[in-house]
Amino acid sequence: MHRPALLLVLLGLCAVSRATDWELSLDARLVSSDAYPSFMEGGLGTLRFGSDDSGVRLGRARFAITQPLGELWSAHLDASVFDDQGASPLGVTEAYALFRPYPFAGYRFRLKAGGFYPPVSLENRSAGWESPYTLSYSAINSWLAVEVRTIGLEGTLDWLGSRSGHAFDLGVTGGVFGWNDRAGVVVASNGFVFTDRQTPLFGRVGQPGVRPLNGAEPFMEIDHRAGAYAGLEARYLDRAVLRVLRYDNRADPTDIDTVSHVIAWDTRFTSAGVRLEGDHGWSAIVQWLGGVTTIAPQSMTLNWPFQAQFALLSKRFGRSTLSARYDRFAVQTNAPEVYGAQDGHAWTAAYLFDADTHWRFALECMRVVSSSANREEQGGPPLATETQWQLAVRYVIGSAIR
Amino acid sequence: MLSLFALYAAAGVLPAATLVVNVRTPEGHTLAGAVVTVRSLDAPGRHAAPVHAVMDQVNRSFAPDLLVIPVGSTVEFPNSDSVSHQIYSFSPAKRFQLPLYRGKPYPPVHFEQPGVVTLGCNIHDEMLAYLLVTDAAWYGRTDGGGSFSAEVPRGRYHVALWHPRLRDNETDLERELTVGDGDRAELTLRLTHGLQPAPLADRPHSWDY
Image (tube, rainbow over all chains, first blue to last red):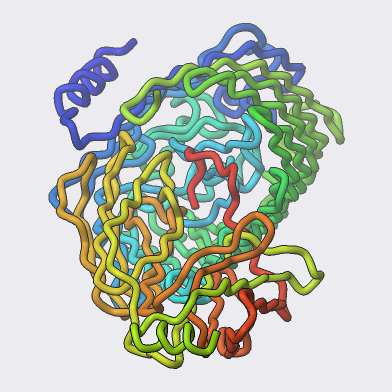
């Protein structure tokens, strides 16, 4: 383990008091893949692991801590080590303070400050922003994992109808953030990918010097203009959640960072999704995300509209969870040689088995069929099929895990 | 017989009879767990004696998740989990909060007003429980056969039904009943609408709400 990682874990353990909740997990994978080289290695594959990554890999090593700070504040830190070829194998994926006053007269306000995910995903609902259904996230949530994060403030006001004799809860959310002026560079350069590797805050994607991403840093502030989002959430008891969000990083697409000479990517998107929970362990999620990312270097305006959708169906029986997901994704562009254009779909099937509170075993198969202008230009086929198998073993310990 | 009745009346105690309330779903199936409250119309000031009850927190759930208590009762809220909870109610019948805790650091909470008190945890939104604080003289929950019974003196009664997931208007389910000469008076309440779905029983703790 790297020295900073060890330091982080030691610091964390020192800070552990009786009121602290902590979790430490190790997720190892046996991978078999025929995919093109991963985007992390400058490849144009759509999967986390390319054919040259087949073998035993580290899925994720994670340490998380939640520390109450007085009665109404708490601090959360989620740090991970990933075994990919990225320049940021170690880092903090989320770190924030949460202000959570008591509900009053049926309403509750919450404030988050720090670095965290905007409230888009209905799939990544487990600790560490993981999915309890599959190993690989959907195209939408993989994209968020790679290059979208709120580094700023988020306020949420909920009307807790279910606590006052009604069947519904309603919430409105608003966020203001900086340091995400490069969100969009990966989806425009590489298209959508399927991964569960979360770029650490202020981390890089891929290696510097390796095209096309060149170790891109999604979390940069270039134009000194805050981005914003606003969202709505409605719930029916604990059975259904509807979530809608409009996001705009409000980046100036003409602005170039004076130090690194990289350009700001103006990215806007809307997402909408529903998650349904039925009796007998059934869950279903349908989610859509559509947006556009734009750069305007030297009086040109280049844009990449992108869309992704998925439908997921999952059934829990005992300690097992069986899930299937269908993703569709596409990127269009007006760039020369349709640089970055992509179109495809993917099937994912996963079986997760929680042997006990510590051990989880998982088997997942993903099959992605896609066209990619960039891949075709490099001599690839017009339509590529990539398949990735993963067998995962995860061990977790923590203050609340017995 | 008449003299015996007069004797009981003189003593202020009328002979007891069994009041039975059967609760049925719209489909006619028995409904277990519904709360029945019975008030005497002849002695409206009569209340049940206060009790001391315990509502624990186990596995990020309240245990039990529904208590019926007479006005003036006290309830303890220990936390048997390894994670901290932060209990609140903003229900008009009792507003209170128990700051972040594990174990049993707080004295019992006193419930002086009748009404429904909805409890939540400010950390774990999936946690939900109810206290029905009642000023009725007789109360209880229907058994597995959908029945509630109480030994009551002969007289006139007001019977009400409550369930946390009730869709029917509560006033539509109120009845008056006279317990007369027989030793048993029976009433069947049938819901017009089905209950709301029950909270998911097997939701993994690791899921967000």
